[in-house]
Each structure stands twice: as structure tokens, then as C-alpha cells.
Length: 188
Image (cartoon, rainbow, N blue to C red; front, side, top):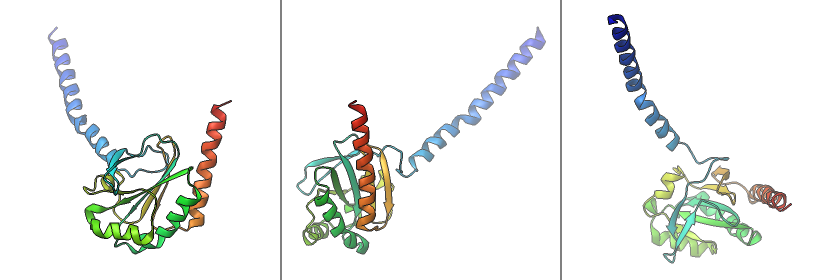
């Protein structure tokens, strides 16, 4: 009987030590996952930011159409280079693609951002990330960074830096085709 009690105490001590030792590992795994980039195949983070008229606009989540989210700053020369292409894409894919420009207002000057929009004649929605919340959620630490998000809220492409308009058209056409194939398959 004494031997059984001693064995039971040893087992309980070892079990307690194992639980104590592994307690922090779950927290580390959660921290590691929050440090991951929103990348292709994963759900895009959701949040809402004000546009230039202070109206809230939702980012991420299910939408009616494909969405291109572009992070930029007025002082970023590559952002200036790609702005005309983004404007052209917004016109070409009107009704099929939503482009959301997110100004890194927390590291930019809002007045200069508004001037940039006017100079570039951007007609797609421009959102102001005044507190840097979107930059944190989307792990943006350089500009420009763009994400193509499907209508189910899944990131399909993440582009860091500038790419050609033709390359964007390839990505957009690929995912528009994929989405129209899904809709056609679900209606049969």
C-alpha cells in the first residue's frame, strides 16, 4: 500500500512538472502565429478604416468581388511610380475588382497624402491608417505592399515593391477566372 501511494505521488509530481513546463509553449505558438505575414492561402485580417470623407470602409472578410489592397506613402517614390497603373487597373476592372489604397498616415503627413491623391488623380477609395493598425495587422514595414484578396477574404497574392501593370493584369485575370469558375460550379 505504501508503495502504491509513493508511486501515485511520483506520477502526480511528474505530471505536474510536465504541465508546468509546457504551459508557456502554447503562448509562444500563439505569438509566433501573430507574427506571420498575411500570405497567400490565409485569411486576410479584417478591420475598418476611414476614407478621405471620414466614412468607414471595411477591409478583409467576404466581399462581392476581388479586392486589391495597396499600402503606400506620399514620400515613397515607388508608390508614385505605380499609382498610374493602379488607377488604370481600377478603370479597366471596374465592377470586377475593388482597389483600396491605404495611406500609411501614421508615418506620413495627411495633407501630403491628400495632395498625392489629387496629383495622381486617384479615383478609387483611399483609406487613412492614422494609428498604424492596418500596417500592424498586415505586417507592412516597407512601401508599397499590395495584396490581392478573393471574395471569400483569402489572400491570393502578396506583392512587396512595384510590379508591372501587365503582371497585375495576369494576377487579376487568374483570380477572376478562378472566382467565376467557383460561381459556375456552385450554380450547377
